[in-house]
Amino acid sequence: MRPGALAALLALSAPALGAAPVPRPLPARMADTGGGTQLIVAVAPDTASTTGTVTWWDRRGGRWVRTGSAPARFGAKGLTDGATRVQGTDTTPTGLYDLPYAFGVQAAPDGTAYPYRPVREDSWWCQDNASLAYNRWTEPRPADCRATEAEHLITYGTQYAHAVVVGFNYERPVRGLGAGIFLHVNGRGATAGCVSVPNDAMRRILTWADPAARPHIAIGTRGGATAVTRY
Image (cartoon, rainbow, N blue to C red):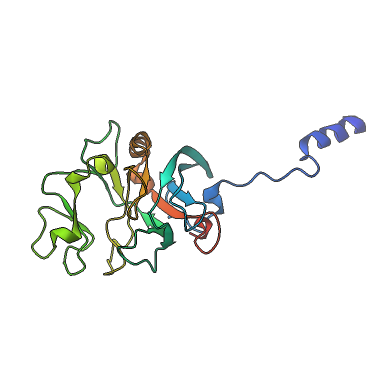
């Protein structure tokens, strides 16, 4: 190859002088993604925000590829560190969590492979700190779980048409930290602490989620102490 031609080839293959580097995909910039090959990321601009974005990702050939995105809603009082959250504050807990199972008032969308629990008339989610069933689905509601401290799931036909349990404070529940945090369908506005998305996005997430890929959800902000990249 002639020297001039080689120089031209090298010039074409080099990045343009002063060009900004292409940012790595968001999951690649995170400290932890849960060890699976699927990830949902819910990001708000800051802790005072009640809206943001949810994206979902697949790891293919050693790289994270964005599969979908949707506008998201968060708690009416914004977001807070999941480790120090207080129950009843209408805040969405930040952090990285597993997704134990899905559920819904409506049948699972065709193609759903994730464990999916149908909501029945006697389906409740106990949020009573004094109950042995704290932060658990119960059928029927146990005597030690007051109805005023529990969600009668079937009464939330819009929000819980389809939902996924977020593993916040789930494996070993700490009383007072919070209960009943889900990824679910939008209601009329901000949530009581959950993350919500439009119905069509929730259905797409359910048909995308593969239990063998061990999907997790990371909830955080764009920067600061609750930046999603910390998780």
